[in-house]
Image 1 (cartoon, rainbow, N blue to C red):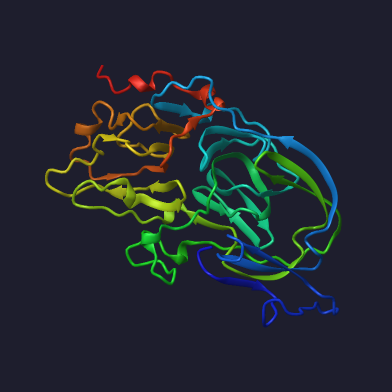
Image 2 (cartoon, rainbow, N blue to C red):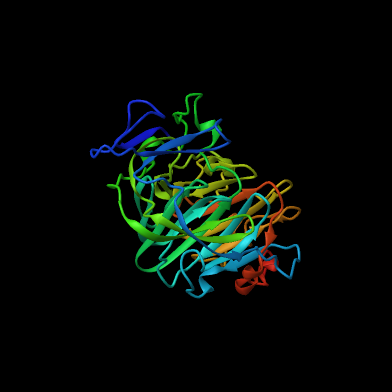
Length: 385
């Protein structure tokens, strides 16, 4: 979605005859948001994408709220989750509401299916591991630090290379985009944005796969997962163009905005979506006022819940967190630097931290899975020793 691109072979106009070198008609598929009133791509298949050979089983799937709903700050040590399942079945739910859901995954096995999330856009943050995302649109190699943005309704296959993969995953009820304030009315990123179009990676075109058979794919619906078998390989695409496709942005390409005094979290914003934002905390120089306090001031979340996923480095305002930790600071409670961190930051020149933050604008419900790695002492961690 960042910008218009085209790949492979295309006809001179939309919705006209387009034939293969053998004279066979390609089958156009229009993939669009908001009916016909928003971004879209046109994809040209060797076979009709509607050919379903078999409808398989339906598996109900609902996120389970935590039995303990105590309203408190939470610290989740997600690296304590064991390796389990594949990148989809092994997901552990962290928290959710009607607009966003968060998971972590530590897959133990490769997946052998194609997948389409018909309910949500997805952002898969790669903490550890490498692999390739294959789709109609081509292939995207991914690695540590990548945000893989997959718009709703895109059929893809997620292949991992090697071992020890860890992911932080966001499912979004609405589209995930760059912030409006970073773009001009043409959609081009402005000079003050902390990244530019050169930082986005779009799919690399693959030659079409012309195979018939039974190809299993799973469709995520609002009620669960529906299994299907297609009558041809889904990646039989001769060409495509448009604004709608999966893409990648790496957290290390975010250029932090700093100031003479402490800057608020919106300067770290990376993506926007209905009901929440995603921010990237990256290595940066601290404030340069002669009386600056680099650590953040105390804050009361009046309209939002704050979720931080810790990736790398020593986070300046926290003690007791480590890689893979998630802190959740809900509305109605003040949060801030823990004892010693506020004064201790004075005189510091830089931080080498990486973290992913979500601020939601409606309350989050903690998931039952999260209780398995919850640190019950965290709400009291602001007490001095």
